[in-house]
Image (tube, rainbow, N blue to C red; front, side, top):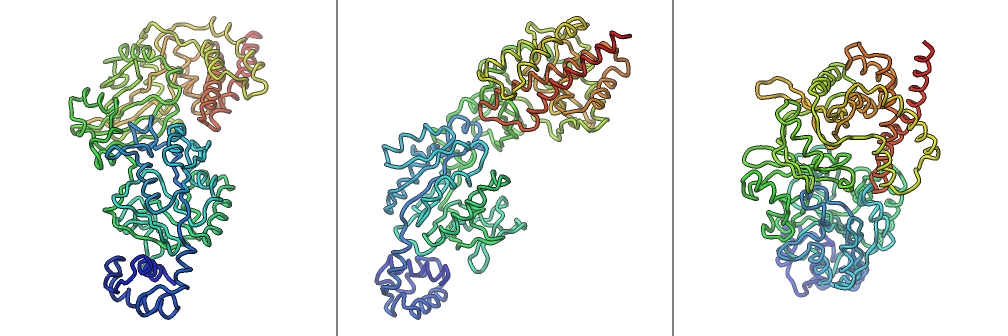
Length: 588
């Protein structure tokens, strides 16, 4: 039987003494479709001519009766800025009720009492549900690195006559039932450009690259015992292929480009997916979850209503911060919210003093708002911005011109960025032995470079420290001219300006030929041998510094891949290069 026939069988089972017209009204199918389906059901002895369910039909319904539910609630909810940082999406409130509690209640209303919630981010916040609703928690420890395929993999053995659902949806009326006749995946009749599936005439869900007629995937599914065998097998296969760590669990429902279970369509008016602050505000503008010091700060700073803050979009997660774009009163802005552990890494009072020192100097736009107590910062958004390309000679020359211009200002602040002290600082932060087996030898070698560096520092001035290609921003001004500014001054302090050259090199992961070329561009072919060796020393010292930084961030669950090991390689390799060059210099 197809999905239509099974839907009609289910409806007849739930509504005894009904007519074909009543069935049509209940299911939304045309009277012609209902009539055709009833003929098939009668012919196959599932019902009789009086629309009474026979034993064969009842057995099918009983075999498919819902048994349990799995709620996936492990993720960060990154798009919920500015409130997702301190609260899981599942606990956002609508009409005073957390989303997940409403879903649990709706499941229990239809007799589903065995409920497992897979948690990860802020897992402790869900503990109260165990006592309040007698649910079980499953812990996903890899929620930061893997998508919800891994969450379902952890509880896959529970799948058999099971509802699987996300935790960030709100149903106005209960979508669950005491009776199910077959496996299905829920979509709405709303078209959605972000979806990659559509429902065909056979009520099948099919993948497509044409996004003009796609259906919104609600994320709720019902999997009966028979189909659970195939699903669990597919989950296992996908989980053990490393390329699928960012996969959604729905990928396991597809056989090539077609779902092997039926689609179940619901009216878009009955469901809301809450992925953003604005979606929550639209659903319930009085929700307690909307209360945010970030939104209050924006409103007060820009002298606008909270409702004027629109089009909030999370930006790419940076190495240190989480930032989001928003609009207010016709102007676009970027709000910076410090990332995990940032309070231990950055002195915001030092950063604030740096912005005072560079204010009005044409190096970068002044912040609209900056607060040293919490690290929040608001800046105007620049349209058409692109970061410098470290492999483009024209970009590199403009970056070095800008860097030289900044250094020649000889600005001063009261604090120093001491790379050796910072190495010690990060060692203490990570509070464990280095993952590199020869770390103590490498560090001892780096310490040997201090004498040469100190001897050859010509001057100290305000230095950016994080002068990497991503922080050189090209943009087009109102006159159509491409401009360049240097942004992100969190680490800036008094230091030898030549440190900035080394920082640009190691972030770009340059080899020695490219490093020498960059030095020549900055110095306009006039770099002394002594300064070149000193920059080699800075490459080595900075390499160890940022290697320690990466190790600390790794302890927080943040991985930087190749960048991390390359920094350690710079420490070892450029120590040798610097020593060799010193020896050559002494021989002359």
